[in-house]
Image (cartoon, rainbow, N blue to C red):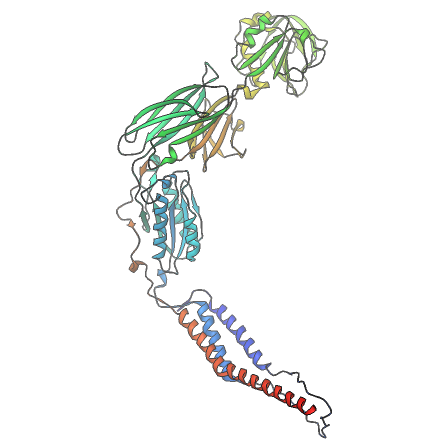
Length: 636
C-alpha cells in the first residue's frame, strides 16, 4: 500500500488531533443550564444541604468510538491509499507541443494546431491518473508551460492556450530540453511525446538523435506552400529618391506553382510580376520605386494557399530629408561645386550682408567674415578674421605646408595629402576637448568643437590653394557635414525577414563598442560578431535596428519562419496514442470505499445516538412548556 496525498506521519498527526478534540467534547458535554421558574414563593429552604460532585466521564462510549472510527476512515480517504500495482508504472512524461509558425497552416477541419492539441489531449487521457505531465511549447525555443503536473484541468488549460508562433521548429533543442527536465526534476522518467507536423529548417534537417522513450503524435500536414521569404530595400546610389526593391519568393511544395507578386505603396500599385516557381526553388524579383515621402510598402503573393501567413508583408519606408545648408559668401561660385553637388544636401547661397542668425538651416557656412551674432545652428567657419574667430587664432602665416591629418578621428578619416601648400592660413589654438583634424608645423589648421551648437573652423580657404586639386577637400567637407548631421548621411537598408536568427553582413569588421542592436522599444538585443558578420536572435515579430557607424539597417521581422523539410522519425520510434493496456494501472485506489464507509459510520452514529438525544430534548421542552401553562392557569 502507498499513500498518494499524505505521508504516514501527516496522517497520524491529523488523526490524533481530531480524536483528541472529539474526546474533549465528550468530557465537557455536561454543563449548567439556565432554568426559568414561576416564582420563589413556593420554594422552601432544605434542612440538609447536599453537595453534588460531577465526575468527568464519557456518557456514550460507543458513540465516541463510532465517530473516531468514521473520522479515521475519512482521513484515510483523503490520504489516498493505493493497493497493488507496479510502483514503477507511475511516471513523469513530457509533451512537446509544436507551436512553430507552420502549425497555423489550414486543413479541412481547422488548423494543424487544432489537430496537435487534440492529439495531446488524447494522449493525456490514456495515462494513469497518477502519472504527471509537463507541457512544453516547442518552436525556435523550448518553453515549459507547466511543471510535472497530475492535475488534468491545469494540463488541459495549458494545451488549450497554446497557439502557433512565428518561428521555425528546433526539434533537437526541444528533445534535449525534455531529457534534461526528466533527468533533473522527474521521479520516474516516462515518455517524451512530440505532437506536431515536424517541419524543420533545412540546416536542421539532419537526423535527430531520437531517445528510446520518444513517441511521435504526427498530424496530417499539407505539403504545398509558396510564400515570401525576404524583402530588401536600399536607396539608389544615383538617385536618393529611388528605392531599389528586392523580393525573394520560395516554393516549399513538391510541385510547380504559378504566382503573381504585386507591390503597393500607400495603397497605389508600385509594381507586379508573374513568376513560376519550381519545387523547392527560391527566386528573386527586383523593382524600382521613386518617392520622397514616408509610407508603407506592401508585398502580396497571389493566389493564397493553405498557409496565408507568408503571402503578405508590409514595410514602413522613411521619408528622405535633405540637409539644409545656408552659405554666406561673397564668392559663392567657388563653394557651389563643393557643397551643392551632394544630392543629399539642399544648399542656399546668400551674401554676407543678408546674414540672419535665426535662419532655418541645419548647417550654416561662413566664408571669411564675422557675423554680428553667432548662428544658432551648427556652423562651419572658413578662414574667419582673427578678431572674431570662435576658436582663437594663434597666428597668421604665409607659405604653410599641411603636414599631418588625424585619420584616427571621425573628421579626419580617409583624408590623405602630400606636400599640400597653403599660401596664407591661420594657426589655431585648440582647447581641451576640441578635435584637431589637420596640423601644420606651427600648430592646428582645422579644429572642431563638439559644443552645442557644433562649430568647425578651417584656418585656410581650401579652393585658394593647392588643396583645390586634392580629393581630400570634398571629403573634408563631407566629413564635417556628416559629423554635424549624421542622420542625414546615414546609409539606410530596410529589410523584411523571418523571425529567428538573423545574419547581417557588414562592410568590414567593426568595433563592437560602436555597434547597437535595438528593438522598436529601444531595448538592446544581444549579438555576436565574427569577422564582418553580425548575428542576433529575435524570437517574436517586430522591428529591429542595427546601427554600425554611418550605416543603419532596419529589419521588419514580420514574416513567419517556415521549415523547409519534414522531419522523419526513425523506424523504432513509437507512434500514435498508446493502447489502454499500455497505460493501464493494475493497482486499486481505495479512497472511494473508505469515504463511503466513513460517511455510513457518521450516519449510523446520528441514528443511534444523535437522533434519540434530539427527541429527548424536544420532549423536555414540551414538558416544560406544559408546566408553565398549568402554573399560569392556577395563578389566574
